Length: 85
Image 1 (cartoon, one colour):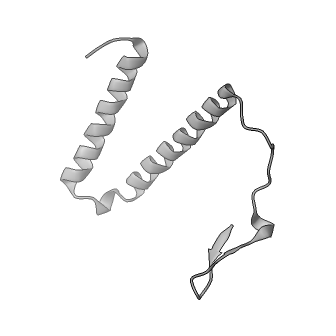
Image 2: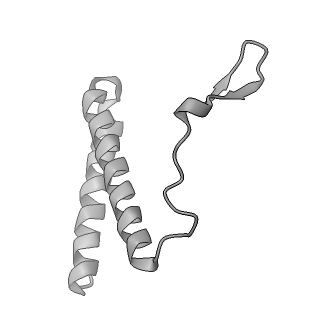
Image 3: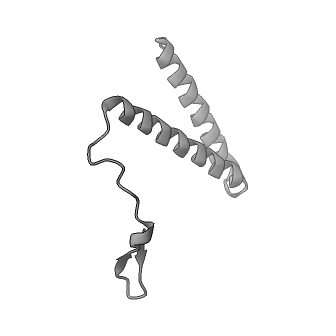
């Protein structure tokens, strides 16, 4: 982990550093699986944030967020099945 000190200098907490699992990169399949997993987690966290903070949005902004999400879901579904809309 990296922390900012009171004098705004960065310091590294060596005990909290991430371990190096491999000196070599991932193969293409493992990388693709990791990317899909990370994007899915990020998407879930974004939906969770929007849900728990919905009361802070204007109704028009919330409506646009919902409609855009639905449109993107439908577009992604049609792309996966090879259909065009």
